[in-house]
Length: 500
Image 1 (cartoon, rainbow, N blue to C red):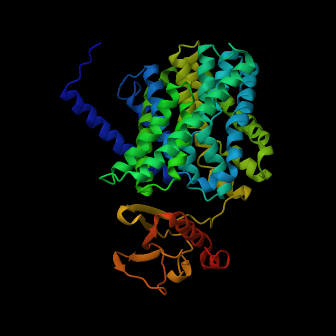
Image 2: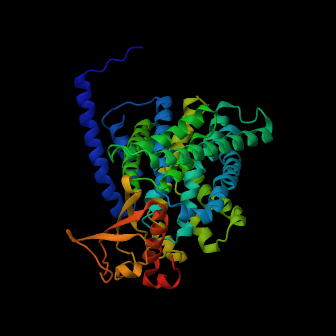
Image 3: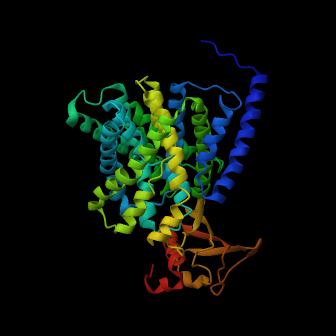
């Protein structure tokens, strides 16, 4: 097949794309102001561009499926690269439990309810449960990071959203193709565990191997480092998928390792991945909005969506959270918040394109129901999260934020130059340079304050908004960053806790 695409058509596509992109960027500001996840505005933009608005027709479920998976890879990569391992390590077991046991409980409750309450056949009922059970990484990362929660809760929710895509993708794919029980229940569980384990192993291999290479290769331009790191995460996904392992487990694992490794220009890499993830989210949600046909959605679809969402939010999600309470300490208030914070977004809609692409009977109705359900319950849960956190008493208004640290390699002396930004809530404010008690051989060489530079001495007092340039031998970099973070969180009192 020969594709014809001339320069004039390209001009039109670029014009429309630029207008949509700028409108989407402005929509982020609107969504933040009203407390809504921006995905709703992007979906609306897609609907308005589609057959009900400007008349752009897009009905290719296979293309939507492929592009949706590509976007999810980039979103999961950003989630892993920007997640602090120190925050999720204590609760990783809880996140894994929610992504496996919790998903299994949720799928079971939803499937049984959909079959007996809504009259769906078992294949469609299981598909409805599977596509609606995973939380959405983009929604969780964008909404929860604006809510002042203790690290335990954000860690659990971020770990869950990064990990639960992998098992649900496998489940939806196997059920859609009718191969779920070809090897029996035990065989099915074995296939899922095998693909997940192999995907995690592939992600660890690429993550640690890529970090080792990146630390030893001095690239000619700082802009190449973010591209290289993002390419490594995509390599983890594609390589694992080629070996019939879980690519989603691989990409998140590799990104988590790379994002927490001692790499040059880490802050630039995280900023780049965040920008790419925003681009992927915008494209993904607009595309999914294009795929929807509003005229096809009936009152029956809306009623089923409302009831299914109620079943998921009030019954399935809380039961899945309570079922995982055996792996970690979490009181009732925290469990209730985690139940309410199970944000759905693009992931359920993308997963609904799998049976659509496989031409499963009634898959179009399933897609429409899932779309309506995501819109309604995102409107319900997203804006109310801060209020629910306050009512349940889990919000920490004074929760300190970590430092922003950027590193550039000084290859000839085996040292790193750290650029440390003292954020608004950092307790480094008011601390003297000598009170930092950095490791021997490490020095604060320069302070940038209000656009002016100064060479500090031991009595220089640090202020909010300062940028510090810290020179550290590479072997002491980890200890230096850890010391800075301790003082940032606890202030000068930290000197009585540690001699490091």
